[in-house]
Image (cartoon, rainbow, N blue to C red):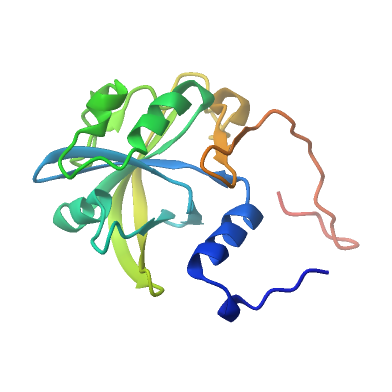
Amino acid sequence: MTEIDASEISWQDQYKLMVGSVTPRPIALVTTIGPDGPNAAPFSFFNAVGSDPAMLMFSVGDRTGQAKDTVRNIRETPEFVVHIVSDAIKEQMNICSVDYPFGVNELEKAGFTALPSRKVKPPYIAEAPVAMECRLLQIVELGRKPYHVVFGEVVFFHYHEGIVNERYHVDVGAVNPVGRLAGKGGYCRVTDRFEMPRIALEGKPSAE
C-alpha cells in the first residue's frame, strides 16, 4: 500500500495524483463572450451536478495570477455554452486548449462554426454533438491557487440528429465522446461498454 500525506507534497504533485486517479474525465468545451468577442476553452474538471433544474459545473485554474478569459467573460456576461467533445472534434478542441493571449478567437483558430444560441448570448459550436446553453448560478473560489468553480443552469439543449430518442434517452455511442486522462496528451474513447443491473433490496424493485 502506497500512502501519501497531501500536506507533505507540492500542489504540482497533488495535481498529478488527482488527474491520474480521477479518470477518465469528461471534457467541457466552453464558449463565452466578453468585450473582446467570443472565446472557447476546454476543461476536464467538469461534471453534471443536478437535474431539477439541470445543472453542471466546471473548474478553472488561474493563468499567471489572473483569471482566464472564460472566467473574465462569465463575470462580464453571466452565460456560457458547454459542449461535449466527440472523437470527431478532438483535434479542434486541442487547438482551443492553447494558451493564447487575451482576445484571441479560438473558434476561428480551430475552424469551428459558431451559431447563435437560442437563450444565451455566447454562440454554440455546430460541429459539437451536444451543446448545453447555461446561465450562471454561482462562481466559487476554492484553494490557494485558486480555482474558480463555475456552476450553471442548463436552459437549452442542442443535439445532432439521431442522438436523443422520443423518451429523451441519449445514445452515447452516437455522441462518441472522448475523455481526459493524465499527462499532456492523455485521452480515451468510449469503445468498451457493458451493462450491470442494479441490485434491488428483497421485495423492492431496483431504481432505474
